[in-house]
Length: 96
Image (cartoon, rainbow, N blue to C red; front, side, top):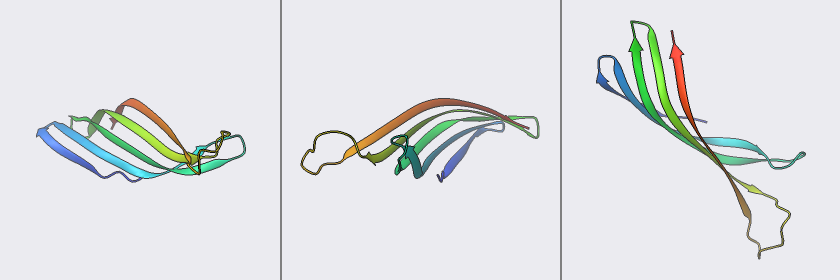
């Protein structure tokens, strides 16, 4: 997954950041099969400078994966079944 991001200074020690991750995801569709799907993950938050070398990251991220699956369902005239998995998480990371 690649994620370009933007970091905007609010003041000398506080930054707002936002990014959009895009890429491929490997999904388990059964015990013996897996598929490749499309993943995207936008995120946003703030970064707080701590002293001269510390950084506290606080943010949230939403992740979603789309993939085709071979479901055990009756035929719908050639339509495929699209699996959609999503998550939301909050993040806190202290870097020194």
